Amino acid sequence: MEFSTTAIIISAVAIVLLWIILYFIPIGLWFSAMVSGVRMSLLQLVLMRWRKVPPGTIVSAMIEGTKAGLHLNPNELEAHYLAGGHVANVVHALVSAQKANITLDFKMATAIDLAGRDVFEAVQMSVNPKVINTPPVTAVAKDGIQLIAKARVTVRANIKQLVGGAGEETVLARVGEGIVSSIGSSDSHKTVLENPDFISRVVLEKGLDAGTAFEILSIDIADIDIGRNIGAVLQMDQANADKNIAQARAEEKRAMAVALEQEMKAKAQEARAKVIEAEAGIPMAIAEAFRSGNLGIMDYYKIRNIQADTSMRESIGKPGDIGRQ
Image (tube, rainbow, N blue to C red):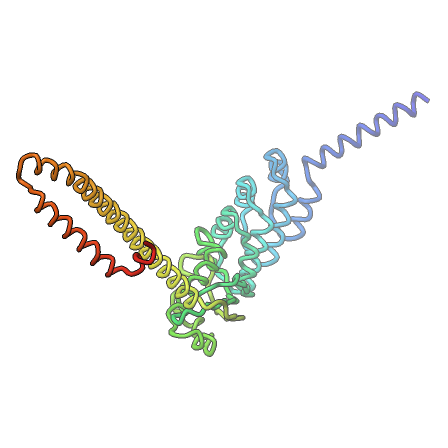
């Protein structure tokens, strides 16, 4: 019993040691590389383990590149992996570029990959152009009619501009700007509806793909819808604004007239008050004239007759007042 337990422990330890040895000394990967025509020493694979680089990734990439006729350096692949790159993706891109007769070297491919772009997808896009649908672009022609256009932009990846070049958002923004300017320069919205290819020609002539990671192959107007009559809306807004201004000015004049009327009434009341005050002093003046001898009794009677005659004439001029009296 003790012998079988000891044998099991020894077997387990042997298996573990064998696994550790095979892990750090990947004989299977070395044999696969050798039969595939890839010259890599067993020591190099062991050192990859110590540098925490998966030998399987490097060996697979070397085998793929060698079978495709590429001359790859395993040290460069290791350096790219340690820099955070995608080794398999880079090798796929190099193989695809070679088959498609696209100029792409290892240095450029690794730079594109480390820049955060999918280099393999870029090579595929160079072979098979991609169609980008723009969001609805709203523009107004010179006659004031709003048009809503949608375009399909066919682009191809520009390998040389992938590092530092602008992305799809910039292309869409530039195409939208070109559509707005081309529609805005049209005399009538009918002209745009009759010749939508006019927009494509104008936009393509502007070279919108400069400084981007893409090459614009074509711009096709997929749909154009008629929106609001912006010119009429602006005219209505202007008319309402003019009406409000006129109303404000009329109200200002009316307020000024009311203030002037109030001022005239105040002056009239002040004048009447002065007349009443003067009339109140007449009896005192007459009495003073009697005392001083400047006014005789006959003169006083003449004054009374004149006042009576004046009152009679005023009564005759206002018949309504006679009826009330």
